[in-house]
Image (cartoon, rainbow, N blue to C red; front, top):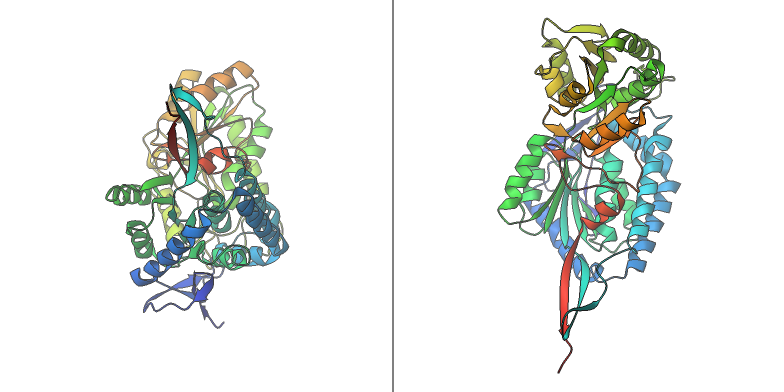
Length: 478
């Protein structure tokens, strides 16, 4: 198979890279190299930020109506080309092709439309006399040039989560996608160039060093990243040198607390989907099942049966699969390593092995008998692995759930309404689901606490994160 060389998208057009080094794009289902992506240099990042800075002079003064219309047109274009986006996304990630449009591309379209609407809903205090003889009002303004870095687990979705609110608010963007999954993001920039002025959206491809150079550059007034805790800490530390704003959406270790009054079959159906969708490569995935000791065996049996029958993995075009391969060789090694290092007191109920000799496939895995301080409980695995722990009472369940450094998402499974409300209050996570786990809507905020980062994606709150407030006061005269 011949390979092609990707290009950056800067100032409204594709630009051949002058980089001397390239990374290989590897099909995660076959391990075959199908393209090369340049490791962009600081010179190319300078060019992208220069384009964004020039574009901001005009884009930052456009009306909300103009920005809304541009994003609506972009959303319509993505919808028209949904199959093309899905082909690229499936090739880069190995995701099941049959469901990709419905599962992810349609969501990106909806998110673009949501933020198109948000562009015309700016809010602030009404003008008034808060000091005698003076009138005050608030301006909500774009921040300026924004640097953004997105991950490989949901390449198009995460790009839209980042660019849509930023552009809707009047900012301009330089974005670096993951080095393993850049294709759909480049297509997004290409399509957007039909509706956005040159330089409003720029995409620079590269590796971790490219991302560091993008974050450290003096031009952006804000940097936003979806990635690992380690990457987030590095971004925050770097941004502090120039007092840039920082928006971090980092890892997760989501608990699902199951009480005796929950239906084991309903729990199994919900958590198998929430734990294994996208091969568990989701920071909100249901990874820690915390179940009351009286129903432990019934819940584990239901989970295992459902995992074996409904959590099949396979190549993107295979029928009847729930998820594809892990994204890359490093991630396969990460998942395998955690399972291989399980302590003696742990028990693998099902799975626990790589599937096949080609491709980064890993079986749906359930592990019981774990203790709170075990690596598999404390550290993000980011793979198709569910761990199961037991609790005696509500107090212990809450302590186990909150007893990790991550705080992104959690769920409670119970028919007791008062209990559900208590736990939704006391669980220290940015999102708490009740009798479900993992659905998202564009209208509601997504973002965590503690080592899961800060700032919100989606919703009006996510939009406001890309704006700044200015107080204007006028003297009324004598």
